[in-house]
Amino acid sequence: MKLKYYLLLFILCGALLSACQKVIDIDVNTSTSQLVIEGNISNVRENQIIKISRSVAYTEKNVYPAVSGADVRVTDNLGNSWKFAETAPGQYAVIMRGVTGRTYKMKVVVDGQDYAATSVMPTAVKIDSLSLSNVTFGSTTRKLVSVNYTDPKGQPNQYRYIMRINGKKSNRVYVTDDRLTDGNIRKEDLYPDTNDDDEDDDLKTGDQVEVETQNIDKDVFTYWFTLRQQRRGGPGGGVTPGNPPSNISNNALGYFSAHTYYSLAISVP
Image (cartoon, rainbow, N blue to C red; front, side, top):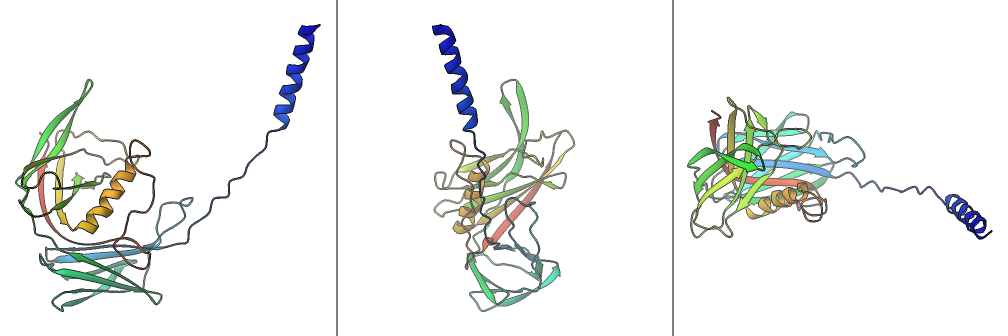
């Protein structure tokens, strides 16, 4: 009798628990669309590009609509001024050359709203060479590209690297500074990554690898460093995802960078 009693009680408890199930709908707030500006001024006389778009909700496809009809200007601390022309939807350009040590100010006007940013062009640091290194994970050995140079002693330097493999830009964010390595001979190892799913690629014989080294100012370094940390994941592997700190006013996203750069290429044997 006791066995039947406990069996009946177990069945009744199970029925009560299943009856208590409830579907919970989570209301996901969609943030207001924000202006996104990607501005670059380099020390090479060429088309300097400033791209303008608008952000979209994270539930939508990651395609930012271009912003046309903006007024885009850049000035320096010597009084020089350049007006950028729209050469494609959301893309503004002018041929000019930035100069080390000068302060550049970008001003963008969209729908009557002003957006401004300032960036100081750092001193260029020459890259000595690129080399190939092998790294082993367990039983797997992979090739990676190393950037070799000497960091100038006694001055703060921040570096960003852009790697292209057979003309395709790596998805990784490569950025570092000399806070702990001032004046040292440096060898920066860059792991290849060109897959859309953010997985590593292996370098293969015959691959052509180009590395562009940018010397960037502190605010731009903070932007890229934060973005790199976020891409590494959550607790234990990075920080909570969010917008990296922009140097552009009026709550705009993105960055404005006046930087020097040096580019080298290497073939994989």
